[in-house]
Length: 398
Image (tube, helix red, strand yellow):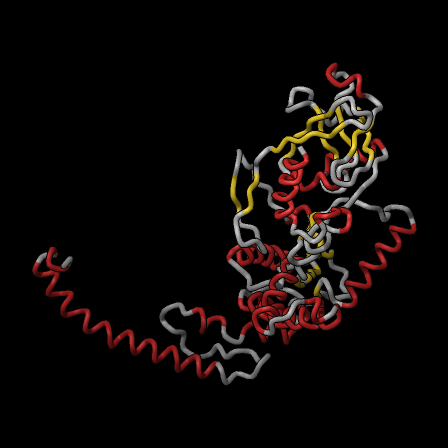
């Protein structure tokens, strides 16, 4: 349709030229294939012959073929240990073995390769160290999904040793693919020094470093809050957790639950005072965590609660005595009722309050995200189901 808008002479030229181009393109493709077949006969590590006629247009496959193997064979990327040249060493940011390289890797490795090649040409003794990274939780998740899909098992079904074998099988497959991609890009790394962050040497070095730091008092063991993945049943680094702000009531699909889970709803309930003189009302968006409450905090200058300083409330589920404490760092008198439930084992702010006031830390969840023995009659309930049943219990208790 568009050709009909062209002048008649132009259309005639196109009709004459296009049929001629097709045989030319086919001939070029055939010539390229013939040259590539000839290059494939070059033994791995041998120098590619350059005395033949150059192809008239640039073809990356022809240009790149065989060169990298020859560079490796000649040891062009290895540093000289006896050299008196000034050293220049960088370590490649190890790509994760969870998949293949992407355009970002291509960009950063091209920049690094440019730098190290320039340094070689500038008279430096250059070492560029390659390697791959285990990627922690990401690799574990990928391998677990693969096991579930192909074998219908979990890492717990396999056991630690068998699961690690599966992980290293994955690493071998995708680690090799990443190294092949780096070679395709021409990255001038010393492949004899290629390592994996979980290989035996690196693992031993990490263990040795932590033992030394522990012995010198630089690191120590203690109970701390962690981000727990109830599906993978493992702790997750802070850097791997994405936080979202919820403006109000929001339904979110949570893995393991048939129906969307309600978030962002403020629930108020009362703690009766031990002496029967009244109650203290608190509010929370996570009512199920009240099963682990070990205190109620108020601001020390809040006139409404000064008569309650030093008193105790009674937990409506466990019937334990919980203290009413004062904490100016945590409590905002102008927010809500001015009284705050404290769950030291399940909230980072409450954790710090628990440390300051030497409160009891009660963990109410098991590794699967279900209520444990500390939850009394709610034991065994999935956490977000307990969110509903705890509220129902409090309503019935008045």
